[in-house]
Amino acid sequence: MAREINVGILGLGTVGTGVAKILLNEQALLTARTGMSFRLKSVADLDWDRERGVDFDGVYTTTDINEVLNDPEIDIVVETIGGCEPAFTFVQQALGNRKHVVTANKALIATRGKELFTQAEANGVDLMFEASVGGGIPIIKGLREGLIANKFLSIYGIINGTSNYILTKMHQDGIDFSQALKEAQIKGFAEADPTLDVSGGDAAHKLTILASLASGGMVDFNSIPVEGITNLTTMDVNFAKNFGYVVKLLAICRFFGEKLDLRVHPTLIPREHLLAAVNDELNAVFVTGNYVGDTMFYGPGAGETPTASAIVSDIVDLSKDLTLKNGEQFSNRTVNPEQVAGLMPLEEISNRFYLRIYSLDKTGILASIAGVLGECGISISSVVQLETHGEKEFVPIVLLTHEAPEKAMNKAIEEIAAFDFVRSDILRLRLF
Image 1 (cartoon, rainbow, N blue to C red):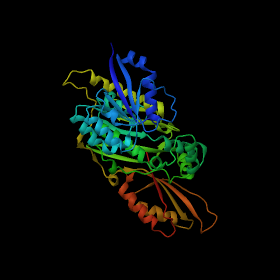
Image 2 (cartoon, rainbow, N blue to C red):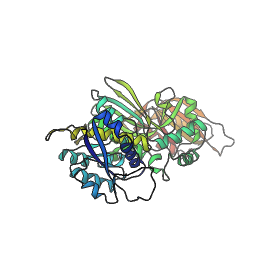
Image 3 (cartoon, helix red, strand yellow):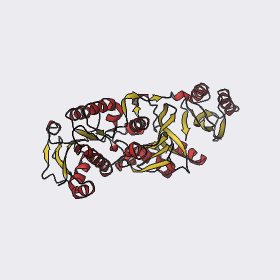
Image 4 (tube, helix red, strand yellow):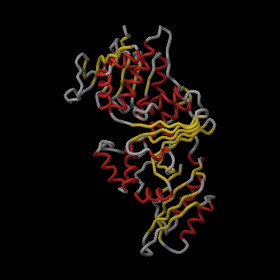
């Protein structure tokens, strides 16, 4: 007979419901492919009045999470509550009870992962999180297993569907940020409060996880420089298009010896690059390894069934532990919670830049701006200055630069902003 694996779910929102559907509807398929039987034994949620389209006949349903956490028959706990608390407390309790845990909670792993990985190791169990980055894209398994022979050189990710949808609409339809955001909310691609998505915070959580896996050590989420997309205008998107680029919110991880260049910000990507073609709510992660070369993982980055699919893959992986003898353990850990990944300060990084500067249209202004850039060691590769209809009207000057250190650009922007003929709202973007 097939070995039975008992699963308990904490939280029955969109993702938890998706996991329940797969475990209940695809039992025969999973057993045929694994030789094991996966039984959804119990589910804990506070709201059982809402219709979810799932038949829970034969499943123990409760409002008391402790009934799942303390059930000795539960082998694997699936956390789909979200947020850091009370999710952290519940996951910690499950690990302490020597239960394997699967989560899609990127904020939890990014900010409290060190504590949870340490506890999992101490209790001889695993904490799995495939669904925390990229929804249904198997990027965690790809880094942890498929590319295990490689030293990673760089990882570039479009890993927030909300911001990618907004930027796609601004690029393709010519609408402004607020209109694109409203459309994303209507279609369910953006939350009522989209701050975490459009500010870059969600992508930074996911970058923390990817960088920790790629480096083998823990990355401090709070040390990652993050910029969102709220200051972008349709004009900027159109200028980028005219220069041959597409603007994407990019999560960046580059390796410089033992140190990492980590950042999240809007980036001008050449339109011929694969990442430039990743549109709407889709996600993609472009990975370069020293042996494999360039690879790209692409697909739906969120949603009930893609995320649930990733969670069930973790459940199947963890079931291998449960078939071993006492004292044996199959481990999926590649992150050492005691090792800290070193980060390069942003000011030491060099980039090409896009600058949008509003200035009065007077003789010598462009020369003055170019002079400041030159004094800071920054050379201009392209420039566009729009015509004005009056001397008191501020008009945009858009510049592309050659590669220069962030520290030099910071100094240049500070000096340019001090001119009385320049508005203070200078926009700086970086090029891929």
